[in-house]
Amino acid sequence: MSEEEKDIESKEPENDADETDASGQKKSRREFLHVAGIGAATAALTTFCQSDPDDPDEGGGDADSDSDSDSDSDSDTDADTDADADADTDSDTDADSDSDTDSDSDSDTDADSDSDSDSDSDSDSDSDSDSDSDSDSDSDTDPPPSSRVVRVIDSTATTWDGGGFSDFYQYGVQSVVDEMFDRGLKALTNTNSLKDAWDALIPGYSSGELIVVHINAFCNNENHKKNNVFQPMSALVKGLVDELGVTPENIAIVDPSQGGLVNNDSRARLVDSCAYSDELSWGLYGGEMGSEIVMTPGHEYQLGTGEDPVQIARVMDEADHVIMMPVMSWHGSNWITGAMKMMVGSMSAMPHIHDYVSGGMRENAFLADLCRMFASKVRLVVGEGLFGNIKGNSSSPHEFQTLGGDGGEHPSSTMYFSRDMVALDCVMFDDLLDEAVAQSNPHSGYRYGFLEYAADSNHNLGTFEMRDDTGSDTYNDIDLVDV
Picture 1: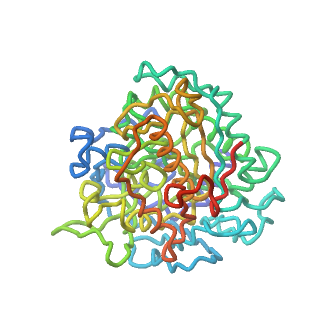
Picture 2: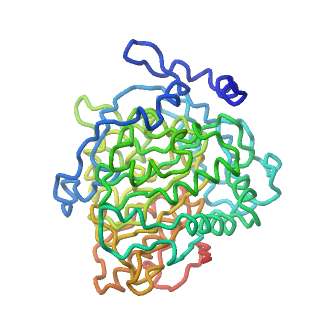
C-alpha cells in the first residue's frame, strides 16, 4: 500500500460505514473510489429530453444536466462530512444549513464570496486547516478578489467551422486551452506561475482530500448538445495533479443527475481524451443523496404526500473542495444554464422543482438555498465557453459574432475564471445577451432574479451586477479582467 493510500485510509475512517452494497456490506468512499473508474462507471441514464424543448412547464427546456431526473436517490445517507468550515466569515448569513439536515455538513455558507483580497483564503474544508492566513500555503500570494471574473478570449482555441454537430468537441486545441488556463488562473490570483495560482486557490491541500468537479451533462450527456468537452477538463486536471499534487483518484468529476456519468457519448467527448482519465473518479456515488436542503421561508418547495424532503447529492456533502465547471449556454426558459442553474443536477425531486413556486427557479431563492449548502467549499468556478450557444440548452453550438467568434468565423472560444459563482454567471449572462443582439435576434422576457437572491444578505454567495440591468457598458462592482 502506498503512503498516499495510507493517508486516505487514516483520514476517513468515519466514512467506512456510509453505504451498503448488494450483499449488505457497508461501502466506504475508498471502496467507491476504486470502482468509480471508467471501466465500471457505465450507468443507465434517465431520458429528460423527450418533452418539448421550448416548453418550460414540461421541463424540456431544462434538459441539461439539471434535467428532470431525481436520480431515484432516496437514500437517507447521513453523509457525515465533518465539513467544519470554521469560516471566519464576514457574511451576514446564519446559513441555517447546519440545522435540520441529515448530515454533519456544517455548510456555514459564508461563501467568502464577498470577502476582500485579504480574506481568509476560503479554505473551509474538513481538512481542519483554519485557513486564517496564507501561512497554510506554500505560496505567499493573497487569495484572489472574490468579485473578480477573468475572461480569456482566444479565437485560435477552436478550429470548428460550424458543421458536424456530432463531433464539434474534436475541434478544441489543447495547447491553446492549456495556455488560456495558465493566463486565466494567474490573472485571477495575481500570481506569476501556475503552481502559485493553484496554491492560492486551494491553500494547504492535504493528501486524501476529495476535490469534486461538478459539470453539466445536458440532455442525457449527448454529444450533439452543448456539453463539457475534454480540453478544458484536461487543463484543469493537469493543474490539480501536476501543480497541486492531488492524487487523480481523489478528483471526482460528477453530475449526479447522470448517475455514473460515463456513457458512449461522454467517452468520446469528455472521458477518453481527458488527462489521467483512467485514474479519475468519474461519477462518484452516482445519484445518491445526502443532506436536506434548508430553504428560505416563503420559497420552500411544496412537498407532496409521502415525498421525501429535497436533498443535495452525497458527493457534495463529502467534498472537501468544490470546483464548478458550467458551460456557457442559453436556456430554453429564458435564462442561462450557468454555474448556479447547473447545480440542480445535484438535488433530489428534480422533476417537480421548476414550477414549485410562482416564477419557477428563475425568480426565487431556491437556487441560492441549494448553492448555500456547499458555498464554503467552492475554490474555483470555470465557465467553459469554447462552444457557447444562444439558442437553448438542448441546441447545438454555433459560430459567434462576439467574443472569440471573429464576426461569425469561429465559436465563442472563451473561458471564464472566478471564485464568485454569482459574478461569473452575471458576466456570462450579459455576454450571451450581447451575442443575441449581434445576431439580430435579441432575447426578451428573460429573468435573473435568482442571481439577486444569491447576492442578498441571507445568502452572500457573491456579487450581483448585470450590465443589462444597469445599462452600462462596464461593471462597477464586478472586477472583470480581460486577458
